[in-house]
Length: 424
Image 1: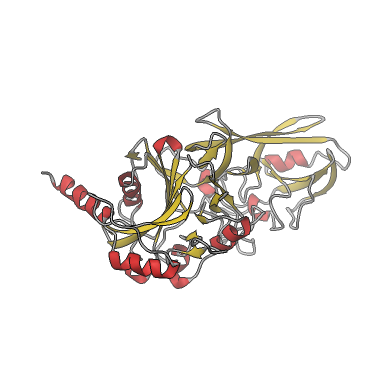
Image 2: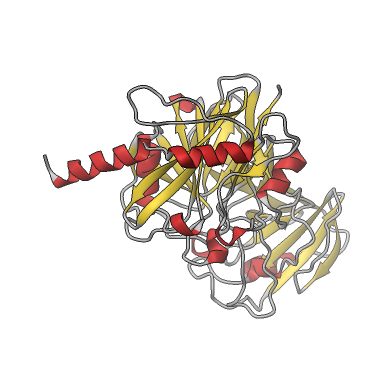
């Protein structure tokens, strides 16, 4: 037997091992008794959350130490069960996962996409808190993806872009896909491609649209950095116009802030895009249209959020980091899209070593996932690790509880997440 096979065997054994005392402690916290061990697979335990939804946790022997894996197992074949986007009602806003779940009436959830958390490289520019990738909530398009060079988070596998999403279609099947922005700004004299929608970063030379879904945060950040460098200086050639009822009603050379009225669109341009917007005057006719186009299926997505794939067709993607270990969040898809595994690692001191991205992919694989998707988490600091959060509502309770231990003992506000809902 090769060393590689020996290591794989040890990993699979560790993966199936649940610490009995740990489950008893977890049951004491939730008021539920652990289930009996599953035959033939080592000790396992789970706690029902709702029809088609169960919570469990187990320990994995990672390369940097023991890691505790918390899981929400969601059966999308159950008509009473569904998943959707958790978010605070605006793209550029944040809230703890527990508050997002309770506010939406979810029985469980995890944190979602990586986001614009800081602007240390652009002094005086407000961090937006907005996520990196595309987002769809209940079939409504919220935002597009920022340029690859503007993303936050660990390096993506080769060939992956910020347009990558995890979503669920109207057929109730989960899938990995990518969503490209398709839009234009049409005036009486020209047609301009739309470079962004409610994004904290716009492509160089483009025009982006901001709607009431954006929120009240300053739009200046959208004109900072370049397509290949998040830390590059902010553009000095900018312009924005406000369109209401199909007509220009205001303009400025500096992107503004404050809420955008429903029915209005603010167009922000940089470089060549700014030069085109300067040609517009108050009263000029402008039409803006946009949509997100999926590359992998004709079935529209009812829900989607960004991140990056780590597992496809049952095999880890090439180039995954197998060195850097951290507390992470991820999701797995199995049973031809009918089962969704929501995973969050524990950030308590004894488990803070976490897993590498390669180990997360292998964990999902061992759990039966055919496809896997990495969400926000990672990093060695307490602040970054605190992103990984999994919540679930104990049976009979009115609110969710945090089931893993975020590093530092507190939840960090996040822009979005995956919510699990039950009609029971």
